[in-house]
Amino acid sequence: MRLIQAVVAVAVLGLASTSMAQNIALNAGLGYTRILNGDGVNGFGIDVFPGYNLGNGVVPELQLGFHYNSTSAEVLGIESSSTAMTIPIMLGARYELDLGGMIKPFAGAHFGISMGKASGETAGVSFDADMTTDLSFNVGAGANYAIAEGMGLGLGLWYWMILSGSSTEVAGVTIETENGQLLNVGLTFTMAL
Image (cartoon, rainbow, N blue to C red; front, top):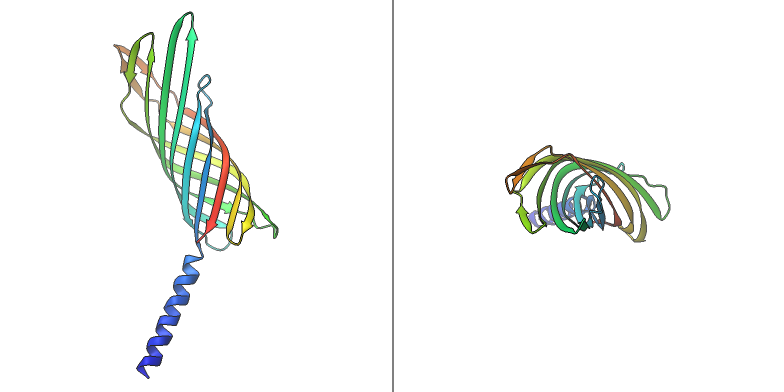
């Protein structure tokens, strides 16, 4: 009798863990990033969004990413270049609309922090700003095409706002940083685990 109880208990636990695991969602994005309030500041970004599918299209998730942007220019014979790295850590949610076909649109929003660091050189003077941590949020939308059961590839577009308003001193000059506005467009990948 104990053997039957043990087998039933293991089967129930196995089914429970399997159904729970099927609700784990992993989304990822890789694409082009542009700082909207900077002249020609382009780069790339990669983000992962682990989450839990509640079964009604709502997926609470965590966003972890790395974005790298750079620019260089020459104005009146003076060369300048700069790079900026941003690491977002945000909580949010995604809504996935199931239309019953191969294409599944989504929309989402996240709120949290973005850690950033900038460096560069202007007229031979280098600067390396301290790491900053600022509040940030994003909103986005896109669509994924089902390539296999529980897997999809698609396109996504995200608008970011980094609420900075910080300042840094470079060679005795204080530089004020305004709120950062970024646009990220790229490939998306989704998988149900």
